[in-house]
Amino acid sequence: MSINCIVVDDDEAAMAYLCDLINQIPFLNLLSYHNYPTEALIAIENKDLQLVFLDINMPGLSGIELARLINSKKGEKIPRIIFTSGYDRYALEGYKVEALDYLLKPISQEDFISSVYKAKINIENRTRASSTLDYPENNFIFLRVEYELIKVYLKNILYIEGFKDYVKIYVTNTETYIKSLTTMKAIEEKLPAHAFMRIHRSFIVSLDKIDSITTNTVKIGKVMIPVSSQYKEGFKKFLDQWF
Image 1 (cartoon, rainbow, N blue to C red):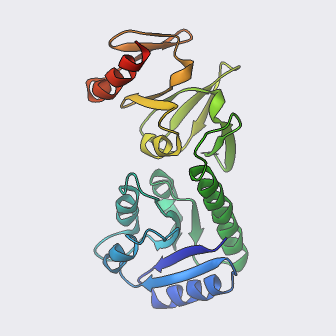
Image 2: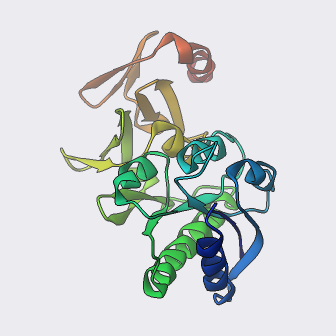
């Protein structure tokens, strides 16, 4: 599988070095490179773009701000982001905007290869999942848990609770939860809409795990989950189907 990518970096030497590394990887296809983030705005609209190597400290529009613009393309295939920076203090900010990886300059060839193979696996899994019309019992998603990617089977998810910088995924056959450094928006886009529903800013529920329903709440096991006014219209359509 060939992965289409771009580079955004205001440092000419760093960009040239990164482009050279990319051209040495057979499955990476460099579409374009840009000195300024504003130049990249048109490039990120390309629906065939799958991966962005993105510097953080840039004039005008920072890499973090550009990443937020990329992630705002709801409903479309959002390219994954690998941040490149000379400063490690931005690493947490990078994960908050769903960056796949964070490469610290000067980038070693070993770290670069490790990062792009991680991207390859992630993009291939996402492509495979999105091409599946029927979601089989063993369908799964990968979630970042600390420094690992953990496979979570969709059939095991009860509900998901969102916090500022992370989510908790509650699953069957355990009283604990999986804590992942991601956002509700990002995880909502990974889940099949016919099987999961967001009913509150802070909650996504698995529809087949609901035990009972009222106008304003759903019950899963012993947990009562509120339905907020923002999501009531969509929830009412689901109620109509029940009845």
